[in-house]
Image 1: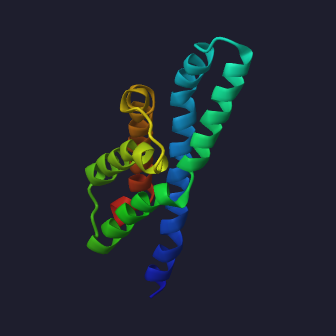
Image 2: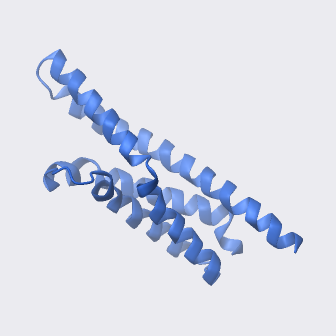
Length: 141
């Protein structure tokens, strides 16, 4: 009984720590691409507009609809007692690679603009976040 209660407390903490790791990886890996995207604009007003668009996209990334697939990945793994590191690493990468499609909602965004800059950064961050979750809680499922 005590082990189950401790697991119920530790799993959300490990999930939050892995989400924080993922966020740090997104910022650090995406910083170069953000600077390149903002620098490529012509006037200062276009740069400011691009920064606000980027901020709006970041807010959409933090919404519940983009966290739900990661939560489902963890719940499925906990119920099925999956301990494989590849499950968490590949699952985290795939989920974050799909996040831009979930975050954009119904707004049409050209796939070439999105895939070239955002998807590789999000996938790499998802791989890292999945590995951190496996280290903290997944290997003891």
